[in-house]
Image 1 (tube, rainbow over the protein chains, first blue to last red):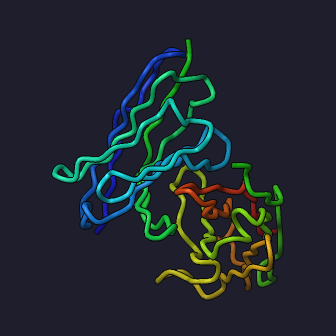
Image 2: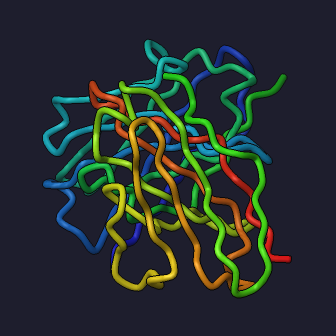
Length: 117
Length: 110
């Protein structure tokens, strides 16, 4: 059974940084594309970032490009999202997702990031 | 990376069929056959219902079907059941290792 467990969310001030982690199990992590998707409270889903299996190819939404960095540690089956220069509008639940050719077929439970002063 | 356009709401009575549209551009929906649909119940993580425009993952009832014409994709739910009441989101590959979601449609079973 595939399991994705996110952690690292919390309250941070505008302009601050936060690093999210996602520990994966039940799959061959080192051959799997992974994504981050977020959902602001009461709002819709927004795609954030994507990373290929060896970590050398990434993609970002325009709204986070230059501020967020996705990375992975295949030895530890862990996906990361480094978030810098955080803004109030980055407040959301962040989901870690298994990406099989654009099919987001496994989702974590999400971790809440709140950006507020 | 503009969001795909979905109607905010849709509704139908039990047993009826309802279709939800998802309109993009030639740079996303119209340019690729990587359109997926997700169902989200309140407080839950989204669930993949349709992938690659019309492929139904194992375990998804055959009441759910997908299609695409030009820059518009559609999700049809036939034989509506109470448990189908949820939010539905479409997504599409948009090139350059990026994706885009629709704004979501709240489906109400009357």
